Length: 253
Image 1 (tube, one colour):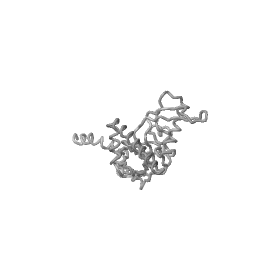
Image 2 (image 1 turned 90 degrees about the horizontal axis):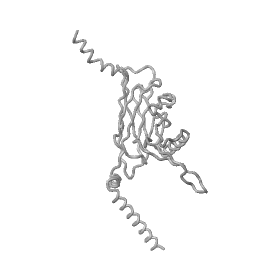
Image 3 (image 1 turned 180 degrees about the vertical axis):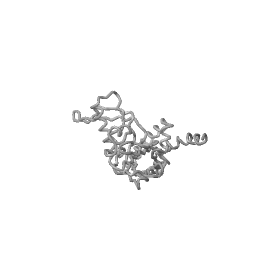
């Protein structure tokens, strides 16, 4: 009797841990190398949904996949035409804007979660917590947020795909996310959410490293570690190129 009771006590946490489904995610590459010829890449995010007892539910579940870059401080400037000249008339600083953000789901986010859940988990470009600084008024903050989101979307750095996740037999899922050529370096985080009737019931994360390699990495390290020498070399190189171009065109004329 005591042995059975002890076995039940030890097994209870494991049984409780298996009470709901869990995600087993993976990615096609743990690191993305940026070289001089880098024109962009595609990252495959895939995985499986493990159900208690191996039995899939009778209803369909939703999967949302997010790829998010390192948080940056960004300054958005608003230009106005003053006396016939375009000038910076106003600006606003955002202290926690992701350098890159892409979200994919098996159907549009508005059909998967409500506004509150989307805001809590930052699902969707419009739900990013950008944290405008300087005590900006709500109307002013919203205007600059709209400008920032539009700019990043044009650059390919913020994206949504309401049909980008494929689910097979309710168990396997996969999504392809495009990485643009101008993507910033750093540690990126992938987040996968399993959603049942608007509620997040499981989540999992993985990391992806985006880094420079080859000559680009050498230049980046030199600029960071020896900033004065790097700046001096850049000035001398510019002067040398300018002198060479002047001499070449002077001979032709």
